[in-house]
Amino acid sequence: MVTMKQPEPFTFEGKGDRAVLLLHGFTGHSADVRMMGRFLAGKGYTAHAPIYRGHGQTPDDIVASNSDEWWEDVQAAYQYLKDQGYAKIAVAGLSLGGVLSLKLAYSYPVRGVITMCSPMFFDNETQLNKGFKLYARQHKQLQGKDNQTIEKELEELMEAPATADMFQRLGTFITDVSKHVDEIYTPLFVVQATEDQMINTDSANYIYEKAESDFKEIKWYENSSHVITMGKEKEQLHEDVYQFLESLDWE
Image (cartoon, rainbow, N blue to C red):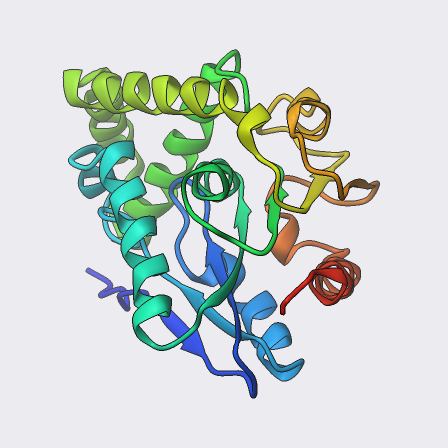
């Protein structure tokens, strides 16, 4: 059996008093946003990325956790930055991380919010299931299990009541956040990959149109798929995120 290195949360310190909270996607972990964090730290921003409960571990660990706990983990990460002396915080999130970023933006004071390929509709449960199943399969392959064992275990995992419960809670969470987007007044940057197969890309327009922010922008990346932070246009994305952060009122 291959032993897999446990992913870690990270904090890359910048030079000043500005901080950005970076939030990963469902089934992902801090590696999703590590390159962006390094880039922003190089530009003077402190970048901090937590790992939600169950993530970066086994598929069973994710199933054993839920979206309410992930939201608690995000609030703890925000508080961590506060405790480190950062009073000025922006938040950026990929996929589910973007949903959590929106919730943070209408629940706590943030300087700006960036969502990247973030779902707003739970009409794509099949895609989420597919994504989770792919993640679980890859994890089991890394463990060195044979195909027959993998298929059997996957079937059991996907049919388990706990898995259904996790997806149901996740769906409820996403739907709930979507109903509160019009409570967001903070500056907003909506990022969406055109080639995104994982979510309903109308989500991007929904976020952009519903938010009450005076300053908001939306950008489509034509050659990117769902994990845009690690895709072909990541350098352009880094630059665009940096320019958005620079445009914010940090005083």
